[in-house]
Length: 64
Image 1 (cartoon, rainbow, N blue to C red):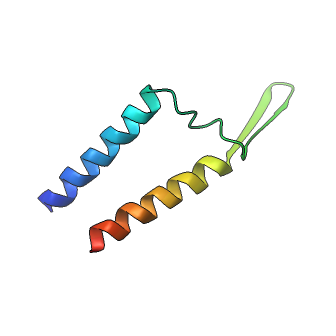
Image 2 (tube, helix red, strand yellow):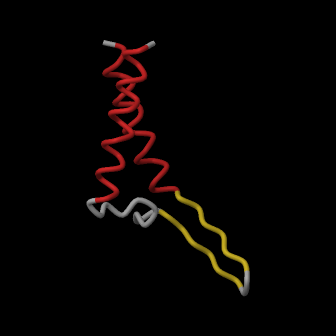
């Protein structure tokens, strides 16, 4: 359990560092924003796909 918490913490820190360096999470090509009057709908498809790939790779490495 301790090893898993350390790895999750390192992954979280790495993502935070990437965001601080200016990677455009939330503004990727497949992220859609629809605005009508006072309402805004945001659908982060590109970000969801990227995070899914990264988490799949991280979990595959943990299983080894």
